[in-house]
Amino acid sequence: QVQLVESGGGLVQAGGSLRLSCAASGRFFSINEMGWYRQAPGKQRELVADITSGGIANYVDSVKGRFTISSDNAKRTVVLQMNSLKPEDTAVYYCHMKIKRAEGGATFSYWGQGTQVTVSS
Image (cartoon, rainbow, N blue to C red; front, side):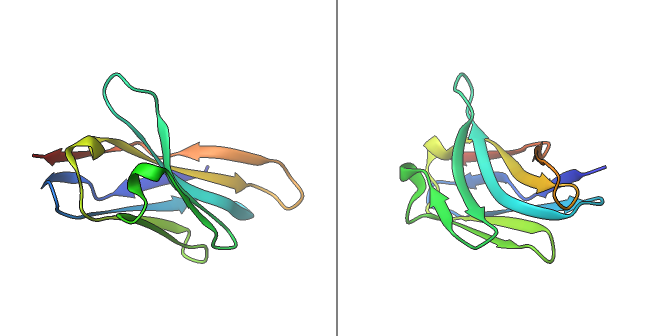
């Protein structure tokens, strides 16, 4: 069974930094894409950043220049380094991976349990 386990998050003052990590466990063939989403109270879940297996990263405009996503497919991990945090970055952050369970098989979406990030002004 594939599981995503997140770590990091917490409370930080505006301008501070946090690092989120996510590791995939279980048996599967490959990870096609990794990313981070967030959901603030009363808002829809939105993509923050994602990265392909080839290392191409994509960011939502509001975090460009402040957040950096990186991945290690061999270690099955994805990291989101968040710098210059703002109160509007406050949300629950979710790790997401597109995983192929078997060679030639379909790709499935998996989600972490979510981790709270709170930025105080």
